[in-house]
Length: 92
Image (cartoon, rainbow, N blue to C red; front, side):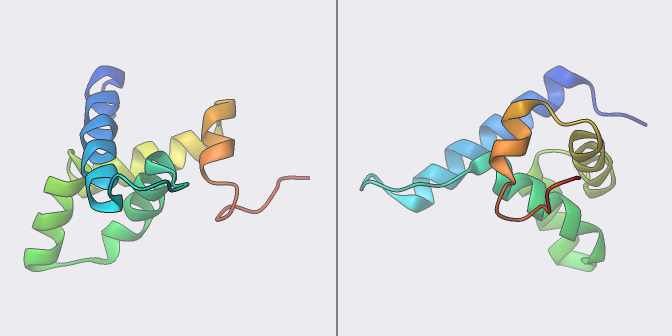
C-alpha cells in the first residue's frame, strides 16, 4: 500500500512543525525532511510502545513511512537530495 501524496505531504509538514518547535527560535540549520526520512528508514526496527510512538511522530504507519522514504530516495526530487545529503551517499 502506498501513502497518497497529500497524506504524506501533510505528515511531513506536521513533523516539520514539531521539529522546528524543538529546535527553537534561535538561528539554526536543520532539515525536517532529512530527519523524517532517517526516522522513517530506522522506524521498522522499533517494537511495542516505541513503534506506536513512531507511527504518531511520522504521521503515518511505520511500514508506510519506510516505503515512502525508500521511494523518495530511489527516485529523488532535487529537494530530497538536498535534505539527505549528509546521510545518503552520492550515486555515481
